[in-house]
Length: 416
Image 1 (cartoon, rainbow, N blue to C red):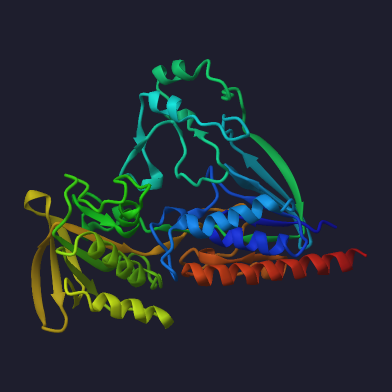
Image 2 (cartoon, helix red, strand yellow):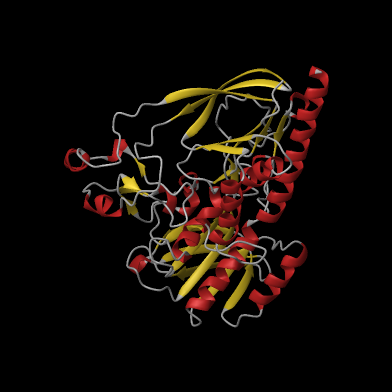
């Protein structure tokens, strides 16, 4: 009987679950589909509760993985098959080629010489990247990745004789024997192109809350300067539209828990950079659970921040690349038409498995969150299970790791 544990997803929840299990003496495999570990937290400028940059918490986790031989991880990897039963699973994993040498090589000069550029998914389309790239300075593993599909003919010629690149590398499959599985596949921002009333992603200077995180980040597309994407100018008037597509039967029929806190945090980003900017938060309800109420009070005390209770009905393109909002002021009973330099849509978190057909064949609820599997030794944690902040995500991951360990121990007793 295997005593190993498989963790599917290498974000904050997956890292926590893997480290907790490994430090209790269990072999752990992490499967991550992107080229690096870190998940959504790596894309943030700061995260609660301490408002630390992502490198702060993630580098500690990465260091713990480096020092623990019981943790093995595979990036650019996805589960393609599962057989067996609780306590004795065989998992098939497909590994996509990375094309770069299995150690840290500085490809920055070669990467900058490449011609073709594509939208940078890590920056949610706010920047471009080359085919040979590394998304963040604290990337783990500290290796470049090569997106062969994004190479132009000229680029192919440039890398033809490059050292430490292996363009003949092929995708391959491996099999892992594990006793239990922890699923930490995380979340994705709700697609703004579904929001017709907010311009379906076509209104200039109307961005998502995750795009705001990237604009605010020191290693983001603007080096941390919060500016309008159209002209690179600091906005004098910024609006936050809460519940953009959330608590809506036509989109996400639930509250994503973190959106209010994310907007409050981003109000502070703007106030710190540009104290003269006018900030307006349009909301249905403001939710600041537990100790986070202190953040709400801090933002309310800012002289340049105002709150309007009311639902934003529409966002349209205005003059001079401004954004015009149609808002119902629920307190005054008025319909308002207001214009802002920059509008931030507080889009909710949608589970990554929503609309997907995962090979693990887990039961999903109508929103795409994992709704079972524990009876067969598969445990969901983090935002694969429900909307959570980072602190509660870590707690959820620890709980899932302990349940997986109990399955391992139960299987070993049964095998004996």
